[in-house]
Structure formats: C-alpha cells, structure tokens
Image 1 (tube, rainbow, N blue to C red):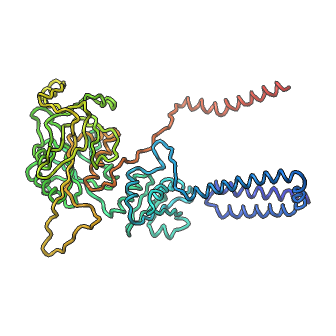
Image 2 (image 1 turned 60 degrees about the vertical axis):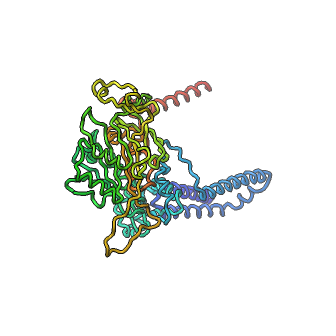
Image 3 (image 1 turned 90 degrees about the horizontal axis):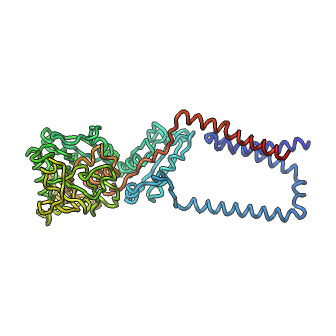
Length: 530
C-alpha cells in the first residue's frame, strides 16, 4: 500500500511538470495544459492527505525553527518578486540596448505619436502557433509613446469573426483605426507600421511629380545615376511618385503636392516655366536641383535660375571646392564638399553627414526680392570656397582660392528655401465660401533650391544623411513637418561567414574535442585517486 501511495506522489509531480513543459512547447494546447496541471495538483493533494502524520511530525522539534526561518525567507523573497513585477507592469520605462534601437521607435515616429489628438486603435492579428511576441516588441513602443494609442492582439483562429470583419488575409497583419478610417500593414517593421499610421491619420496620399523632358533624373531608373532609391523612400513616407511632361500636360497636375525638377540638362521652355509659376501661385511646392554647368559655355537652365531669383534665391555660376579634407572621410576629393546643416525646419535635429559630389552655390538674396526672403538650408565648411574660374577648373582640374578674382569665401550656402503666403485662388461666384480649418496647415507656396542633383542619386545614397536630407526637404515642402526626423535604420548584419572547412572543424570540436577533453580529465582524476 505504501508503495502505491509513493507512486501517487511521483505521478502528481510528473503531471505538473508535463503541464509546465507543454505550456512552453505547445502554447496552442492551453486547455490540455490547464487540465494536466489541475490533475497533478489533485494527485499531489491526495498524496499529502495520505501522509498527514509524517507531515505533522516534521513540524515538531528543533528543526521546526530552522524550517520556519527558511520558509519565511522564501515567502519574503516571493513577496519582493511579486512587488517588483507589480510595479514593472504599471510603469512604461524601457531600456533598448540594441545597436540600432531595434525595439524603440525613431524620432520620426515619436513626433507623429506626440501629435495625436484622437484615439488610434491598433489590432494585431498573430499566428497562434508562433505567438505574438514579435508583434509586441514592435507595437508596444507605440502604446508607450502616446496615451491615445491602444493595442489589441488577436488570434484569428480563436476570434474568426473579428478577422473576417477586418478582411484579414494573412498572419502578421496590423490594422490601424482612426476617426472612422482603416489602414492595414502586412509587415511589422517600423517603416511599414508608421507609414500605415500616417496614412490613416491623413486619410489621403500626397503626390510628388518629377518633371521629365530635359534630361532630368528618372525616379524609375535603378542605375547609379537614377532616383529609384529616393522614389522608394518617398513611398515609404506616404507619397505617390509620378512623372510629368509639362509640354504634353500643359500644366502641373491638379493633384500634385510637390513638383521636382532634378538636374535638367537643358533649359525649360516658356510654357513650362509659366506652368511652374502658376503652380507656385496657387500655393504649390517646388524643388529645384540645379547642377553646375558641365563646362565653360555649357547649357544652363537660365529660366529656372531666373525663377529662383524671383523667389529670393541666388544660384551661382561657380563650383564649390572644399579643402577641409572632410570629403576624404567618405572617399571623395575636394570637389565633393561635405554639407553642414544651417538652422532651418528642414534640418531640425539633423546631425548626419551629407555629401554633394558636384555642387554650385545657392543662397538667399540679401534683403530678399519683392518681400520673399529665403533661408539657408545647407552650407559647406569654413575651409571651402566657391570657385569662379571655371575655365581653369575644367581645363586643368586645378583650383586655387582667389577672393580678388571673384571667388566666394566659405562657408558657402549650397541649398536654400523660401516660404510665401500665397493668395488663395478665386472661387467661382456661385460656390460657397470654404475657409481652411483653423487647425489645418497654413496655405503656403514653398520653394527649395539645391545646387546639386547628384546627392540624391542611387550611387550616393550610401552617405548616411543624403537620403534623410532629401526626404526632409520633400516633407517640409508638403507641410508634413512631423515627418522631418531621422528615419529608422536597418539592423546591422552581424553574421559570421564560415568556409566548409571551418564548419567541419567546429563540428569536430563540438562533438569530439570538448567531450574528449572532459573524458580525459575524468580518467586523470580517477588515476590520481587510484
């Protein structure tokens, strides 16, 4: 009988341990886990009742005092542990020790979360077999970043009704609800999640049109001189990217948010120039990227240079040279100056290095033009200058700082921006007045001019700040200042590449080397004791 009772105790322990193991190995079998745990506790309870005399006897004598102290210590430790967990569950303090901050949100996302004035409901649909931990790592910082954000994790297998209502087609889908609008993200990286959040807040996608027809950069080209990398970045920031030929279209499309003229090789025609002027006149946003001439007497976009002058921005006929040696840090020469941010909303909290492979000076006209006063955006180091002797530069490749000959001393402004409150277009006589919302963006015409288009080409996007600078300019033009921040970076790949021989050596060491050393040491100890 005693033997049967002893086996009963062991059976209870095995049932409890099986329940714990099943909880971690197969979490989807939670009902069976609970049943096994309950059965184990019942069996252990029956065993304890059958041994009540031995248990009562163990509380007698001097050992009881020592046992009480030990039990008290265990209870105190458990109490402290419970208290710490209780506090931790009610606090939002987190430490992200990963190199790229993979479990934190970027400044860009923080700004969007801080600007929320209405509730955002996030529903994450996870695979019950693999759990929701990966989604929690990504989405919990959103809830921590704003009291307006709530996150709910849903297993479609256990709640098919909700999954059907939100038309969930795959695991890992994250649904954002805001002000009656719904947006989905099928990937859990921060770029995709923040993009979906921005879309659901705005309710619409803004469009960027790249002008074509004069040798400009092509947003669809994936070669080293193309703009496909920048086009991908714009799409990530909730822009649609299109191209337009102004001669064929006759005007800038009505749905355009930003018009980009990047690196034209020839001048635009008068109808095209007038279309750009009209677009700015109706509160449009334009980005001009005007490269230096290819040589003395080479073609220049004179009409666009004149347009920039009308808006208070002077485009120089020169090439900026930087003798500070900073360009050597990224493998370029003195004809590729490093850009330093000037105080402006575009460069707010911008601390990354940028490089401009071949740029001309672009700066504000002193005193402004017709009430339009521009501001610097980027400038070069004090050791730089704007070289005006283009003949010598192109003939021999030599440069010499000569202020008396017309060179401009550094720092040299290479990008500038201007904002003008543009008059709203006259509404039709029979149309009701529809003033802008008091809390909406102020209607403005905005213009950004940069003396180089190479800085945003695919071959230079590896420079840490070039991509972010361009996207900051685009978002500032679109009056999306909350997206002007440093964007999240991909995690570093720290994998170790091993040859087949190295892998074989590691395998032999693991399976034979280490066990062999342990066996040899055991034999040595046995021989010594013998």
